[in-house]
Image (cartoon, one colour):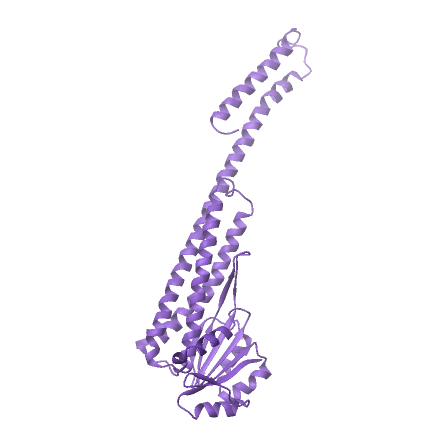
Length: 332
């Protein structure tokens, strides 16, 4: 469905005709105007009108309708197509969720298609409408503002992930937390969330580098003003910081998982030593009782009056001796 549709003239919002064809014609009639249409999870039928009026490429339209795309930048004859993945993080459940945002830029128009509940564009649009100087740059200003907002969101998510990972690390290396049976599951789940985050941030680096003029021989990107390169370069620098943080988080969580598994292995070895020690202590009276339980007439001290208390004392003495030996070695 169409969430919002407006013509921006000289950085100011104006309400245009309801007919998309007339609105686009009006926007193109003036060099300082452009049309911005925002859609949320449109159906194929709903998108057909937009496709026809703006001459969007069918491959890009298919990507916009089906979603589940990696961040990318594609140039077609009549438009520029870019995919971004907004990300949000729920610290209580340690869950990273990603939506999808597609942008079509062309001659005096920008079309945004949003999938998922992450990052509604209403706040971005309102923020832009308070900055007419940015809107005067046309569709390029919209593209920059959305990309900058999403990367800033990445920085916040990376910070929250780092904070939660510090808490998880403290739990793993605490005297009581490291041996918890659900700790390994939590660490692995956390690693999966980092992987989900990386799927949004890492593939975005080449498209932003291209917009910043760092692509193949600095070739200009159609429908994007060349003087906007420093702004996209700034966004790319922020994204580089995010990717470095994500890489560090991924390595750290792998190290924490390895340390936890090593702790569990040591604990299991301690448990096996303790079990073996108690089994050895139980074997002595079992062996002596088994020998004297045999029904033979001619056995040493079988008919001696003090045989029973002597055997009991001998078993007790051997048990105490073994216990002290194992206790000194930390096996009990």
